[in-house]
Length: 192
Ligand code: SF4
Ligand code: SF4
Figure 1 (cartoon, helix red, strand yellow):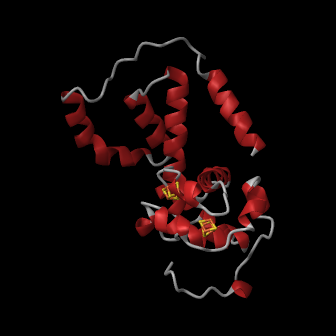
Figure 2 (cartoon, helix red, strand yellow; figure 1 turned 90 degrees about the vertical axis):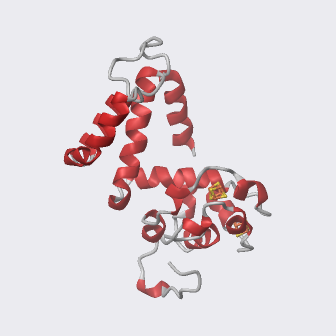
C-alpha cells in the first residue's frame, strides 16, 4: 500500500474494538500522535507493505482485515527499536506479537505458511528442547502442501551429505522438561 494512498473508510468493514483486542496496548495506541518515529527507526520498514506508523493508525481505525492480511508483522525482527523510541511509550513490539497471534488464531490464508512454520518450530522445540530438522520439515510440509517438499529434495540431499541435517533422534533432555515454559508463555499470552 503506497504511503500517500487515500483510504475510503466508508467503503471498508471496520471493527472499532480492534485496538481493545490488543490490550493493554489498545488504549495506549489511541494516544499515538502519528509522529513516524517508529517507521523511521524500523530496519524492516522499507520491505513492509504497511509501515509501522500507518499500521498503528489503521489499528486505531479498526481496519482488522487490512492489518491482519499485511505482511508487515511477519517482517518484524523484534528489535524493539520502535518501542524504545516511541514518545508515547506504547509497547509496539509486543503489540506486533499480539497481531501475529490474532493472525494465527484467525488462520489468515496468505500467512498460513508463516504460521505453520512457527507452530512446527515450537512443537519440535517443546518436544526435544532443540531443533530436529527432519521432524520439523515433515511437520511443516504436512501442514501445508506435502508436494512442496519435492522442490526442496535436492537441497535436503545436499544438506544431508554435508552433515547439516541429522536424521537420527537428538538426545532427549527429558520428556516434558520444557512444558512448564511453554505453558507459562501460553498463560501470559492469554492474559494480554
Ligand atoms: S512512534 Fe509512537 S507515537 Fe509515533 S507514530 Fe509510532 S506509535 Fe505513534
Ligand atoms: S520491533 Fe519490529 S516493527 Fe519495531 S522497529 Fe523492530 S523490526 Fe520494526
